[in-house]
Image (cartoon, rainbow, N blue to C red; front, side):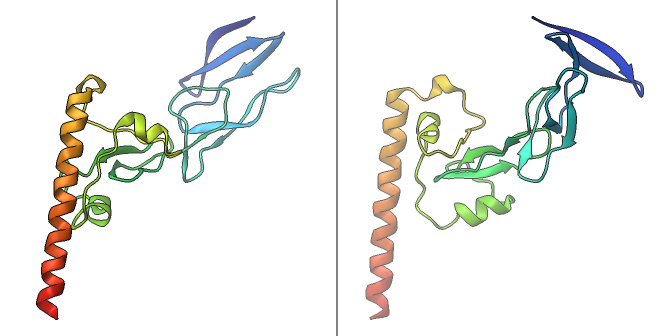
Length: 164
């Protein structure tokens, strides 16, 4: 059985849990477990390294940061306390360097949240509640993607013909 209690350490709450007779500390946000608690030995925590994060008090190691998949750019980078937040290339963000690198001047493919899970790149779309991605909405967006791709190909062919 597991119980929680707080203890003040250096003026901050220090959350501990009890498990199998052990009194184990939980690592705070931005920190992950390096060595698990065992009888007679408390949890050993370490700062999350670059590319990892821990958003809350936990008894787990830091998690790997998500990478934005196709059709998405990094709206907010991963920090030691929060995961990467990805957004669709359909929402322009010209001041964002990742948007400029991944989205500008390229055909924009839309990636719905359920598709992101299937890419092995755990991507998250921001500013769009899940209920907005009804089948009709998705089909409409995909149609716009196809139109943009065809328009881009047509423009590229015209430019190639002008060069020759």
